[in-house]
Length: 96
Image 1 (cartoon, one colour):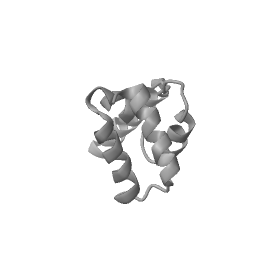
Image 2 (cartoon, rainbow, N blue to C red; image 1 turned 180 degrees about the vertical axis):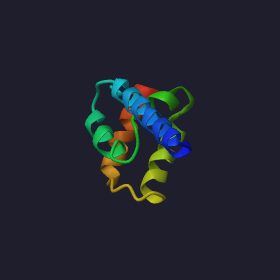
Image 3 (cartoon, one colour; image 1 turned 180 degrees about the horizontal axis):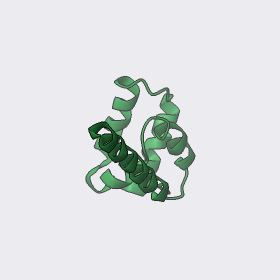
Image 4 (cartoon, rainbow, N blue to C red; image 1 turned 30 degrees about the vertical axis):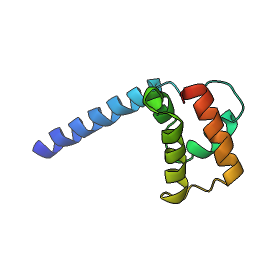
C-alpha cells in the first residue's frame, strides 16, 4: 500500500511540475545588433533568464569575464569576433 502512495505522489509531482513548465514564458531579449549571437550561443547551454535576472548587477568588466569563463572554462565554441559582438550587445542592452 505504501508503494502505491509513493507512486501516486510521484505522479502528482510530475504532473504539477510539467504544468508549471508549460506555463513558463520564454525569455525575450531586447532587440539589437548581436541578439541573434546571444540567443544562438548562450542559450545553447543555459537559459537566457540568466542575462535578464543578473543584468542589474553586471557591468562591462563582469560581462567580459562571464563571456571569457564560458569560452575558456566551459568550452563554449565562440570565436573572438563573436565574443566581442556578444559583449557589445550585453553592455548596450543590459548594463555596462
